[in-house]
Image (tube, rainbow, N blue to C red; front, side):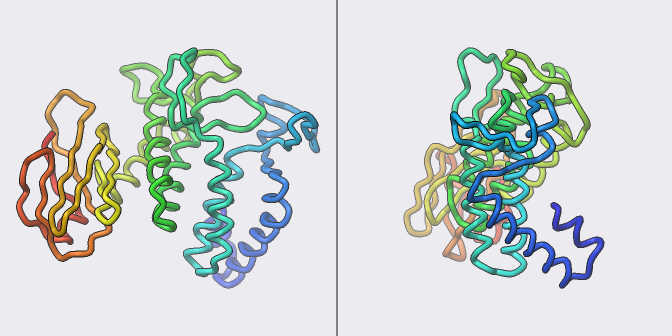
Amino acid sequence: MFLAELSKHTSESKYLEAAELSMKYIFRNIVPYRKWFDFETFFSCSRKPLGFFDSFTQQHPQNTLSMHQAAEACYELYKMTKNPIYKEKGIEIMDYLCLFQQVWSPSWLSCELFGGFGVQNTDAEWSDSRQGYFAVTLMNYYEMTGRREYFERGIAALRAMFSLFESPTSPRTAENYAHSGHDQLAGVTGIHWGTGSSVVSIHLITQRYGDAYVNVKEQWGVGIDGCRIPRVAVKGSSIDVEILDNFSSPRTINVRFDKLSRPAYNIRVNGKSFGTVSARALKEGIGVGL
């Protein structure tokens, strides 16, 4: 994201040179010491003096948005240069960012918070709207590495956005949940921070992966839009998939198949045969009634 802005003001070679110099600084001075600072670590709702260091935990203040921007920059630079250092360091930063992802939903908080991301290590927000952006970057890291974990974490982060609606009838999502430890939604800010980012993120992800995604090579699948895939069985050119829906009303979803090694496959979904379908059509997705 900062790379795209930088490119507006510099030639391509100067842009790339400046970006690589910036990342070298981050690799040398930020990553080893976990100095993930931004404005919010010192001057927002968890104020502290510049240079603050917690002697009890032996930690600097750390903001997840800073980690995300660095991981995103590594991903973009790896795409541009194919230099393995950006992939290696990007994975290191992304894995550290994932330590801030919520893998449970506390019983004392009313909202469903699984999959959401916190803001920083010195404040109490749960499921902040930045997780919509994080979801897309996690999916990019799945493409770069092939790691199933990144895919599943990305979808969990995406779904966490939709538990932040300010009411059952409102189209707006709140900035975060349980700010300062209170069991309530925070306020709604700009359209880009919650409402817009959640909608754009789900469109970006479903354009690439459909409403449900099946990795044929590794025989697993993940439901994206209100469904889940408990079973994928592949035998030769036959694929058998089970999809469970979270909605009671009948609907049709787009199921996309990836990592295909044959020109065509015999497809069954929930016991229904779809006949022989070409690999090209499977990549684009087939309509499945639920």
